[in-house]
Length: 430
Image (cartoon, rainbow, N blue to C red; front, side, top):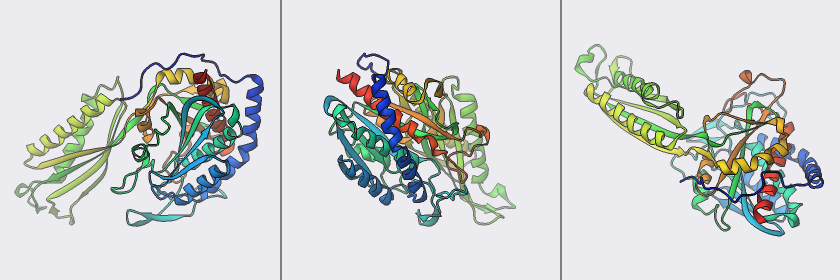
């Protein structure tokens, strides 16, 4: 159940006075060059999900230098640090994900990744093609700034450096669910959690946010179709699972176009992989298709699962074949607590400038940050990293070889995290 209750009522204006804001600006400015340097080091040394050994060691060493209480090995390679403020108050968590992707980088930059690693038994190139290196650097910068303000802070700040946001390999556990399972949102119990994601198609330094559902759930599904093998010249003597699969794929798309209430929330069903057959003149006996489902409403998510099950089995049955449909939920809908968003929006505007904070539409991308929202009110937003002279329509998307981030405004992310922590904790501590 997502947290949707009303939080304690307090002023919706940033708490910091002019002098305090100036001091925060100065501290953020002092760490800016380090944040960029950290990001570029991590970019040049990427690691895949559940294999973030160097990254975790890099993070832990810097947190220990700040004198924080540091715990490593959380959720396999995760790092968690506590900063206890000098004044009483709530526990506020900040999260950054650390893993990279099996993508070969094409960008011509001095810190380009040329690394490779093993992924599911294959040697693959590795690249930070989603900007998680930026997230880690921003959170390290935030920890540095807030540590220097420790005696004036209300409550406790929990810094969560999470592995495997892109999904653990194979049958391994990992990511936010494993960290939560191991108690990351407890001891001490988190009262609110904030997260951000860099975006390659949003102008650098601009923040985008949305109240309520902001990112889709991500389900992985498979359909195993079983027909009857025959010679390709005599299809009537067999049952063709390829033709059955084609009809099932079409049927899935009519769930989107004719059965889902799209005025309520969007739905995406994508078949991304099909495997069947060994020879061009043999109708095979079996076929396996796999894909992903994206929804932005929990009830619709369940309904889509049921309709896909019915569609696959009945279409197969009509042709004399059988179909076994299975689905695994990888992430839930990322849900921003509306009351938390309303109260903390002035903090975003104070950090980035009101003209640089924009309300956005929801996205069918997915994030396992969603699971943290089951444990405490959550607020997840986006920070722009696209060069100002670039056309958003031409900017390379995430998870692609040409993905590129302008890291000149990572300090905006640092200041925003700091502003959120200070404002939320100090107000709640009064």
